[in-house]
Structure formats: structure tokens, C-alpha cells
Length: 173
Image (cartoon, rainbow, N blue to C red; front, side, top):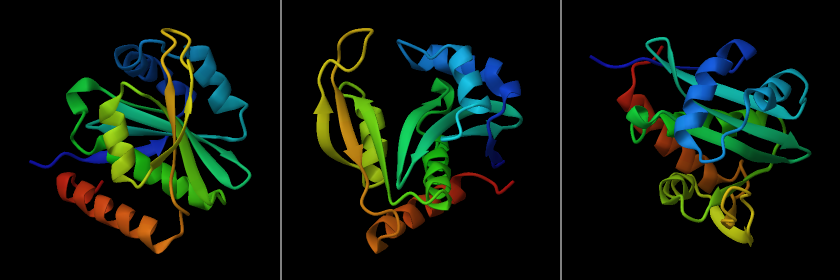
């Protein structure tokens, strides 16, 4: 039986489930109050949740700043990793970026997070810099990554291929 994946904007009502995912995904999780602010007062923020059978299994967010979308966070429950959930979330976030007028997308990722880097590279993100001692919890560096122009034929082709793979793995809901 195919699983139905439902993507929808996050709301304050989702924050208890977000906290669970945050706490199992990050060494320095954001507090719920940060997400409350993001969802209620940050006009630059867009957050999307992914549900399977009604359960929040992942989420991601961007900030839309002039012509750039900055991926602020992405997390998926461990049991749902490597299943296409993160790919579906990032596809939706990049669509939201285009709707918001972004020309490119950027992000910061821990140098030790090879799984996330692999996902981002599959989307065409390339390393363009490094933020030294960026993470407060352990002083780890962050890689700065960016996409090509979001409307470029290459970027659109990458995302079309990834979308096909995701759709083959999940029932349309």
C-alpha cells in the first residue's frame, strides 16, 4: 500500500510535533517560542510540514529576502529519513521561493552533516563559502551553499527529475 504524503503550511497548532522532530534531529534545537515568532510575526518566513497518515514527519522553512530564499531549517523524523520526505519538502520550499520572487536559494549546513549535504547537492546546491565556528553548541563550521538561478533550465530539470522520483514513492493526496 502506498503512503500518502501531505504537504501544508505549518501552523502554531503543529508546534508540539515540531518540537519532537527538532529534539531528535538537532544538537541545539530551536525553542518552540522561536517557531511561534516565525509563524506569527516574521513576514519573511514560510514553513511547510509533511504528514503521513496524519502524523507530522518533517518540516522545513525559508526566509524570503528580496530576491533570495534562505533555507532556515529542515528536519525529518529518523524513521522517515531517506524515504523522499526531505526531497518533497525542499521541492515545495523552492516552489514557495519562486512564488515569493526569489532568484536563488541559499543555506548553511554543518560540515559534519554529510546526509544533508548529499540532499542539497542533489538539488544543485553548490558550496560557495564557509562560516567559521558558526554553530554555538560546538563551534563547528557551516558550509554556505547556493543554487543556480531558480528559473534556469538546469535547475528546473533537476527539480523535475526529483519530483518524479518523489511522486513514484508516495500516493498523491
